[in-house]
Length: 462
Image (cartoon, rainbow, N blue to C red):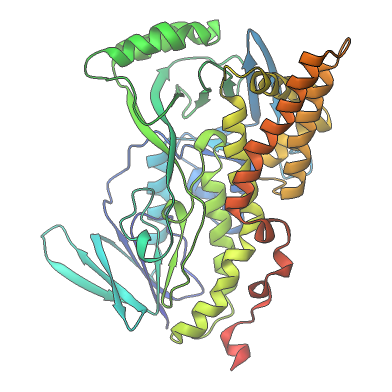
């Protein structure tokens, strides 16, 4: 029987083919977070593939069928292209803590899983190979756990990632979270995105009686909650820009005072392949949470890793296993990089700017999506994780830019309009190409050219 240890806060589904799994969680009480509350349809499909779809049952999860986009008093509804899927397939939104508890219950119910509360303090290394972890339990006692494979997934605040990757964490903005009670959104079972100034505002249901509101505040500093500066900002700057149907509920949520904040982090995956260990989740790769793609990426990664490990009979040859698992970083790229790139690009496009060309790009994006047909189905299939194809993403992104230039040329082009159009194209390139470069052009668009793509299991090599 093989042993696998998983330190940190994790999605505990790595109970692979009867292997023994030791899950060490920092805190086993129900988490209370303002993010990780939306699972896209593509993520739900991965949950089904893992046999964990019942983890969204009995937590008052809400079906999400698409998005509604608002700008300057106008709105357009964008539905997920779900026609080809089983009727159960849709997005789900919920309280993150309830979902995590259901995952933990599922894992703990399996006889080959040991679920333990403890804080992992360090990796145990020997001659460059990770042998396990050192952790501290509630009593303060220091313990050690050994395993042939240690999966590190201790979240966005990871204190272990530096040993396993080159972290380049950016914090473009912060989310300010509120819960609106007994509020009816303009479009039922849809997430709502308001293209506000200075940056987007999100609304989506998290239970049958509650709606999550996330207000994006650019930069790393937010107005003080304690001094009342935040409440004043929300009432004077944000409230006038939200749909009138939910205005009263929004003000009531502010007056209730349960305002939370969370930094939004972005970090490309830059792994250091290390024998005996693997990095996953937000400890490994993050993107702006605007599109709600984080859990889809995580679940997709787990499916890739499960399929890679499934044929292995022996995990004890650390160097051979490490070489084989390098294919994980390539096989995950098409899905992960598409969702990451879309999140980063959309956040920049949806944020307001004094630059006329950027403002035109923002308007062009709203109008392009409002056209319907392939102009909305293509982008929403990318956003939902149902069609994670990098080439499709680039095609639609530049279709929006070209559409924006075409609008500028009507009814008659002028030197000023031509110059704005040129800057619009230049700005579009300036948004998407750096993100693609950080993701890795070869791995993103031509994964089959990467040698690790064809790595055979160690048993087949020896």
